[in-house]
Image (cartoon, rainbow, N blue to C red; front, side, top):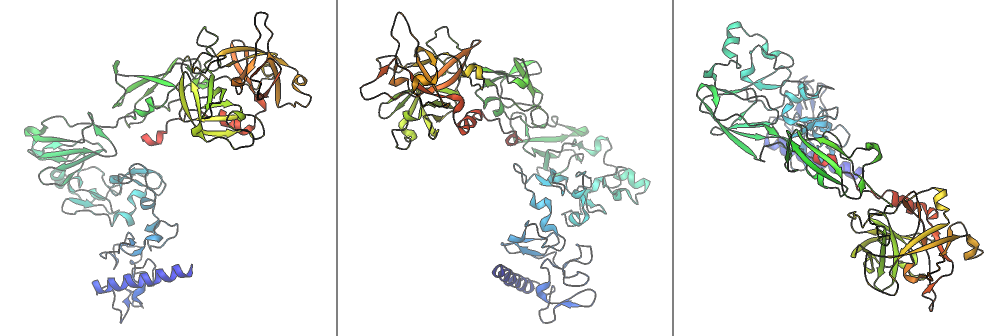
Length: 585
């Protein structure tokens, strides 16, 4: 720490030497700096952010920062300037320590950075952001602390006195607003000492044509005189034959996405065309970022495209195929969002929820939640969609013996005849179960839906179940799987040491055929049906012997309710992310 302080002292000495060489009037190194009270201090103490003189005149006199020897100095690139002119090291700026004598190095105006528009919006001391042009304009725009009109900030604010008037409080207003019978300075100093005749002469709001064209009040306007290149402020009038360029601030645009417009003030004080309105499009991405919703847009009762969405446009949001409205929205088939005048939506868009565990086809062999799992060693297993981007299967399907799990590029999931890559394999520890995180969020349809999950003991203890598996004796990639009905047996049927983590299943007896479970069925979900909805209650853990590919004997399955809590959390939290509204602000 002492090395840093030593470095800063040397750096300040260097800065002060340069300053003294450039401007001998600041300080004479032989005599020191003469304070206004008659005392003196060393030149190194002048304009360093700390008051050395008893009256503070080495930085600024008493509380008047306009009386400072530091006003006109320039700072090196590795320094920043205090509001009254002193230079401090860049590292000391916004470090929660006051290094400027006026404490301006920690002002929220400089230290709070607006995420989207740092040049257009600045911070009040309260933390609220307002447009930069609202600071020191004579009006109070920071209602919580009035910090946008602090005299010690505004007295140093640029104010061209040939065209503008500085309020006693420091704010800067156009000269045309001086003595116009309107309080334009919040301290009313612009209306002090004004005679009746002067009021008439200076009144800028007269509607006589000879006074030109009026610029209407719009906080998002940025206007310049095209020929003379000076700024014109809202509520000012411009002379006849003046050509102006109008731009929009604060990410607002003109309809049609134009960046600027031109107008001419014609005879009789009328514009050659009405002044354009600055508008802010609502972010259209919020309507299309989710696979779970669809949207139709309308404006004033007519259908419009959902792009370049202007204020008062209504977006009617509905659920996409194989999705349903979230419970908090009730039984409504759709909901509406309105684009507001500030470019924000009237409400946050909610995503719809997947329809789970229901067939969308009369063909019982089409199981929308069942998938195939294949490895580069041509191993085949089954799996079950449990969320929009997660499939559950048996761990031994992606990990052989005591070897670590296969790398993701060696595993693929077959969904509706398409191969989907895997981005992560999450093992269930000592339990024969694994989650396969898919590289993409699935687009649900009648043939792709997740299975339902429940903690119901009644459903989990069902004695009848079924699973889907690869067609027997074929390697064909298909979305039509073979359905096998199962009996859920007491645990001792699968072995005396079977604990509560597992269940025991066996193909149900059929008079017309001998049902079996084969090695390709490993990892498939054990499914139980209740009131027309299907739930996963287990994951088949069949590891056939070298010469045993199929069997009708009892087989162990991992009980779904007994998988590790970390896997349950991973499944329950796997939802489409909500659109970040802050990105569209």
